[in-house]
Length: 475
Image (cartoon, rainbow, N blue to C red; front, side, top):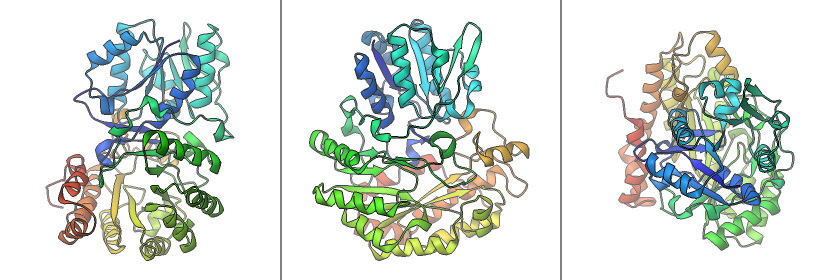
């Protein structure tokens, strides 16, 4: 059974990150992410026959070239990686595949099929099966079923599928308790040299070290996708994956991809000790909550190669943080950034504009607060009312949502929420103003050129201004 795994970016179209719960234009991160979940599914599919993985983000192929490649590979199954912002293009590719090769079984996975369930397949009739939630165990069972020619899709948990009676939605699949049962990504299927960091042009990869988050932030899609229970890979698993990346693929830069890296400080300390003991000499970044840090942990992380920590700041207004159920204070944020500065760890602050209660005044307060912290980088987003989130339910009940396509549900795009206190245009304006206010400071540009980057590297870092498309009208 020939399995073809596809990141369906067509030449000339937008390049999108589609990885776990993260789905946005690659320009918003200034780099292309390696599709490690596709590579994990590739490792699973190898047990059932030949496998081909094509990442359209780096292959730069036309639709006709996609179709020709699929035909030459003689695919029996095509599994398509999806996300909300890219869904229109993703499904256009799926439609073209089905029309040219009607015998091929098309399977899609990602947050879109998880949050919309039955509706996702109704929206796109040419998709045979949609995987809901974590894909690995479900994909394994699907391949077993299809290879054996069994007609028992009704028994596979975690899928929506269609038969002659219409769309059927099976019961959810329980979360994977032991993440170590998931194979290490088959990075031999990827063109690893194509995934490079914007500031130093070095090859990097993602390491999915844990899944799940116990917090209740009203805007977050982690809970419906990965659950509230935090499940971690063992330290031995993580070390083995790092060694494989270094020894086989020459990868020495990593992003630890989990929600709250420093939630379990004992685990972090043990992992850092293992990295140091094995003399891995890697450089890495991670993301975490500001209220889970202490200086001892940060010192340990830096000694093990950490150089950048992403911090969930979200807002500079305490009432908005409280309404969003963030469970952190402005003082927590200030202390976290100050600790990172003391141990010489760079920081990236993540902001969200347009949460309930946002006004022009609170948005400006957030920008002023951001500028006061001494951050090294910022990322700013507009709040998105995704299905199966508390914010999504609130926005729909109050009539705030102004989108007419699911592809507009883009965390890295313009606002689609018109509240009584803030229009969607105003929210988008302040998100873009945050970028301009932070990155266009002459002192910031000069500091980065002198201390860290060549001018060429700085221009590469600022490519995301093409995505930002600054608003020129006065507010």
